[in-house]
Image 1: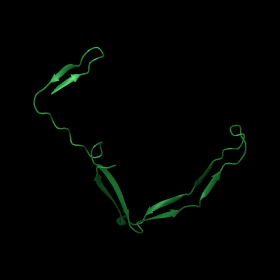
Image 2: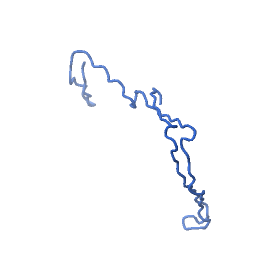
Image 3: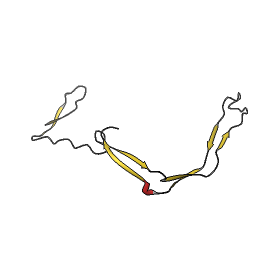
Image 4: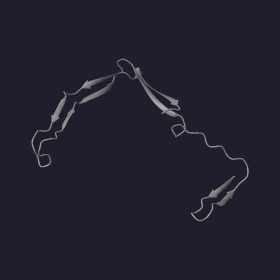
Length: 105
C-alpha cells in the first residue's frame, strides 16, 4: 500500500509511506451512524392508559385594528390562542415502547 501526499500546482504528488501486508478491512457500521442500521422507536397505548385533564377554557387573542406608525393602513393583525391542559398516566401497564433496527430512515 502506498500513500501519496497531494502536490501543489507545480509539483507532482510525492510518495509518503509504503507498507506491505494485508490491508485492514473497514470497520463495521455502528448503529445510528451513516451507513449503519437506524433505531426506530414505536409506542403502543392501550385503552385508558392515559387521560387528559382540561384545566381551562380556550382563550383567543386578537390585536386591535388601529393604525400605528409601523402599520398606518391597518394591514397587519396578530391572532393567538391558548388552552391549558395536562396529560396524566392512569395505568403504566397498559403502555409500552419498542425499538427496532432498519436500514432505512
